[in-house]
Amino acid sequence: MTQVTERGTRLPAAPRAGVRRRSPAAAACVVGGAVAAGLGLGFLAVLVIVLWISSPYPDSGPGGALHLAAGLWLLGHGTELVRYETLSGVPAPVGVTPLLLVALPVLLMRRAARLGGASDEDDEEVLPATAVFSAVLCGYLAVGALATVYAAGGPMPADPISAAWHVPLVAVLAAAGGVWGAKGRPLGPLPNWLPGGLRRGFVRPRYALALRAGAGGALVLLGGGALLVGASLAWHGAQVQASFLSLTGVWSGRFAVLLLALALIPNAMVWGAAYALGPGFALGAGVTATPLGSAGAPALPRFPLLEALPAAGPGTPLTWAAVGVPVVAGLAVGWFAVRRAREVSYGETALTAALGAVVCGLAMAGLAAASAGPLGSRRLAEFGPVWWATGAAAFAWTLALAVPVAVGVHAWRYRPAAGPGAADTDADVPGGGGWHDSGVRELRWELMRKASGTLVPEIVPVAPPVPPVPPVEVAPVAPAPAVRARRAVTVVAGLDLGPAPVAPPVPDAPAVPPVPSGAGVRVLARRKPSA
View 1 (cartoon, rainbow, N blue to C red):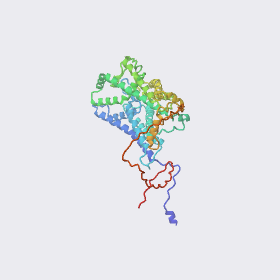
View 2 (tube, rainbow, N blue to C red; view 1 turned 90 degrees about the vertical axis):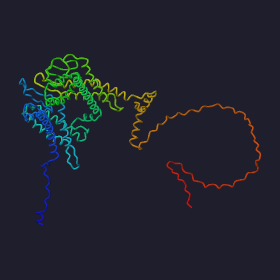
View 3 (cartoon, one colour; view 1 turned 45 degrees about the vertical axis):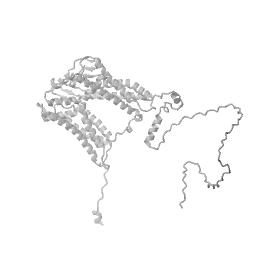
View 4 (cartoon, helix red, strand yellow; view 1 turned 90 degrees about the horizontal axis):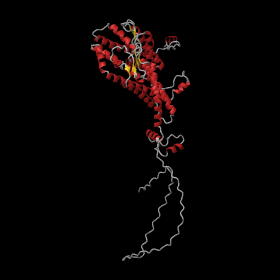
């Protein structure tokens, strides 16, 4: 008994309360965030190395090219780079971020967060959204810190203060979008730490409509800006071509210039939208280009996109026509702000359009701030649209046009049915509004019947009841004297007028019991008995 007790199988010890079990899913999320940052760095490193190899006169070795790639990766997050090799000897900041370059880290970070929050197997561990968000963010920021330190030894190091908040900001927004998409894009209640009135207010459908209307207005403004940029590039085609060919004579250099121009196309769209809104954009200290004209001679570098800028001087009717872009944007906000429901009041529709104008103004202000930045320390310290002026102009244009358009569209869609008896019918029916005369009730009932099969009966229009006609009293008429008519007699020869033979009597059929008249009674035919 002692041997069995001493050499028996040991039972597993209970887990200690102070020891926490490591989660492999959390470690995978950290690695996923680091891999996302490494893929962005690797893509830019390969691109820069290819251009460095193909260049006939490289300025530095492969180490300098890799440092430059790290700097470009940080620039894609909005970080300012510092250029020390200038003619004046004064360090010049480079803060204009190509918006197309921002898409690379955003897409990679969003994909890493989405994969970390998804589960392919049933027995796989699923982390909560906050854990996935924190783990992916830690891995990404760790690589970002190393890239900032590595870029400090290159020709264009990153500003540490700018990198300390730009890189986390982009990573947080991209990771939040990825986790939200992995969880099915829930639109549930807001956190409990927010005020109750705010949480109840955001449940209303007006905010979703306002968000859609504001996004539609911002897209119309960006499309109009792209149209203005394209028209200006076509108008100044000769200058643009001369500038592109004069920058470099080798194909590798021209390919690099082409890539930079393509990466700056979204910036040009935002600048075109700011130009159409009225505030325009700054081309240096004291120089602003607006539809009304531009004063001063900006000291700009030679670049193909900059050759498409409007000429200095007062505005022309051709530049004034750019104000049609915000007009169309205001109409779009008003159109999308109308809710497809009859019970919505005019005040609710106007409030939704106003909120859509606020969303459009905030979106344009953020895009203007992201597309602008310094290109130097003196005259080019201000380059691009002013974010607060662009946002205020977008809000004012859309608010002035969206509210009346939304109210008008709402009134037109849900106008009462035309007809001689429309007013009387609306007055008799409680609630009015032409509900019973416009055919909406019958249409919805028909759609429900088709969707449910035979569960919902078909509506058969019932004729209105006919009022009873009162009897008309007719005066009695005196009867006319009866006149006896003569009968015609036909004489036929050869007929036997004797008594006719009497037929034998037919036996009466057995009596059949009466069938009760009621619903659901089935009468069966009587079968003949078999012989």
